[in-house]
Amino acid sequence: MRRSKADARLMEGGVMERLMLGDVEVLRVEELCGRFGSGRVLVPDCPPEVWDAHRKWLEPDFWEPEDDQVVGVVQTWVLRSEGRTILVDTGVGNGRRRPGSPHFDQLETDYLGRLAAVGVRPEDVDVVVNTHLHGDHVGWNTRAEGDSWVPTFPNASYLMPAADHAYFSPEGAAARPVPRDDAGRARREEQRNIFADSVEPVVRAGQAVLWEGGHRVDGHLTLEPAPGHTPGSAVLRLASGADRAVFVGDLLHTPVQILEPECSSCLCEDPVGAAASRRRVLERAADEGELFVPAHFGGSGVAEVWREGGKFGIRGWGEQGSGAGSGRGSGVGA
Image 1 (cartoon, rainbow, N blue to C red):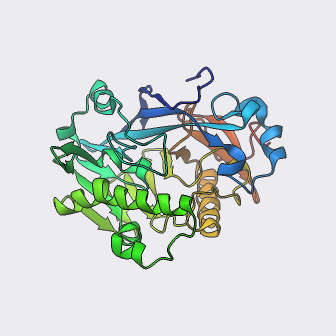
Image 2: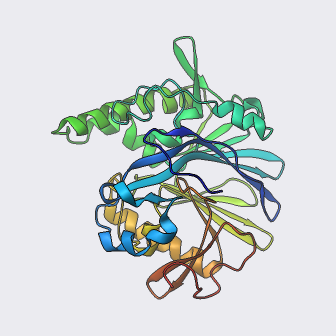
């Protein structure tokens, strides 16, 4: 899926084509697509020459080099597995107060209409996976009902990392140092809002499953910890027949982090831990032929990665059964 250059606003997204991985159907429903800010700010330790050297393929799906803008999406992966409907991350949501993220503040999109377009009504959802509890991954966990927030998906179990629940809860926030600058205070207020409108209502309704150490969703899907971006950040592994994939959430935000896995984003709570998790997951994806599925990539949204020792590259984008990880390829970084 190719896009013309995104404008300065985040635009409403759409729906991608169907992909089958073994017996699991995979679809992507976008909530937003557009420019998410400076690449050199988002990934501050990534050398400028890395961006410039790969400009030809980063543009236009991942980067607009003229003004150094990362292009990305906020999206949900819809999985149909063993007769159940599973959502991986739920975007920003409508009508949220997000003082630290003006492009997410008081958003209004037709996200539920896009789910309906792929045959998913709120009552059809059996499982919601939140890879971590940042605001652009939990927003549609809930919807407004009068003056209250209630679970959007009334029949679903919501799988949330226990470590993130503890960290972002009011008690966990109170135990951390008070931010010294206005940006830090705005982010702290935003985190309180996220917990109050998108996390705690699900817990109160008895629909949250706070897992730790690992969690089997079904015979094809398993959650595993990948801490660093947040304390509870997780990846969801898919294994069905001969096909393998790993949904990595915010383990990375841009493809340059595949080429430079030591470079964490400015949004990571623990940049060193995030880099260690990123390298470990990339190694397994390359070695075992797992499709690599980040939360925010534009284009096809799915990468095939290779490695040679500690060096990683991208073999191709979004093709089922093309043998990712079988050795060094001729793609990006080769």
